[in-house]
Image (cartoon, rainbow, N blue to C red; front, side, top):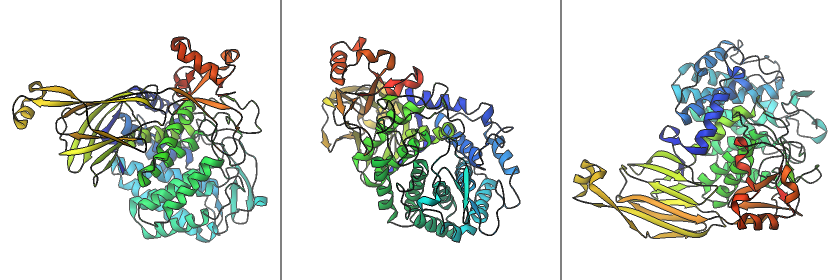
Length: 563
């Protein structure tokens, strides 16, 4: 399945608001040409610059608004390159600084995205030069990457810092960040199909897969970014075995690296804070794995990550910040979710650009062979979907994830003879009702189409539909004007997921959306059962609030796990 082109998708409602807030945030002084080269104070050349460029490009494609400083930032960064075509220190004799390599992965991503967006040949050449001059000389160095427990450092702050030298490596407290470049190098290979770059990418993946991730407490952001790089390498045809490798890595993360609200532990085995960079990575991994495998469980994971982890991590100013590790065994007050820092403006806010744009990009998935359009999550929007030689213009209005009412309107589409609209239904959805409005033409189809919709009327019909493994399938024809889907989302409780989260408490859900109470109301929440009973009896006075709305209400401490 293929995601929709961002140029053909316009988000509305919540996603549009979130993307707009972040786009405005990324035009503040920290992300301008005069500051972008000097903001980093922790030794990550290329990182701030690359993340900013990538975020601005992706948000421009999503919001359809040209960024104020994007082109000037690119010019500034290109003018700052050293004699070998990259940023920072030039190391000799095979020495490598993993933070420099990690930072340049984001610069590669930014340059590749900018090339796709503008066609800039200068950025194409600059990216290829980075791959050839910074990464290709390190074939032997990558084979000696420090992976023994005694070689690593188990400390570090939120921004990460260089810790010590081990052999040919200057290693970081962000353990494993030398493999974040699987993302940048795979993007470079996808853009250029340069075989030397592809061979280096294969070598790096082979070394990455040898790591004992939980044994040396690898950073989950590095793990998941590397996993995304492996998935892109798979999609570009490097090695069919890469798909299984990515599936295993993501399964390991779900079991050992995820909090009770579907955010992340910053490192495996060290639940000290969350990092939206990794939460966004996990959403991307889940959706990309679904697109490749069609396994519905990946959609469930993606929705829960987006609504409860990523959604809570966005702040009122549009940026993203770190939180506490909800539910993690051995951490203090782990039933309450709190901000760990107001905003991680040095990394996570920029990564939000790809996170929110990907929520738009994966809102529709197409399969020409089966003539199917899949909706993995309902999201208000307008979209132009290319399918089997036709174009489908669809407007979607939804109450999801707060409610189960959605309307798809197909007026004005050049719909192929028929296609299947396939929609994800939450496991706990009840009382499903599906209705379809078909057009009844006053004259023949050609005349009615030429004259416009004023010559037709809509007749409500009961459509034929099927439900297979939680996916609702409806046949759409040239006569289909609207499809209306309604279902109820009752409250229910679940034990927290993951091997390292508490099992003696529960979370409250409606569908895939988690609910909480502010700590000020904690005295009123003796148990989940009582809270649910009160909410069902009188919804207007319920103290339960979804985690998803925290960015526009408050980020006070939220009690999320209950007896």
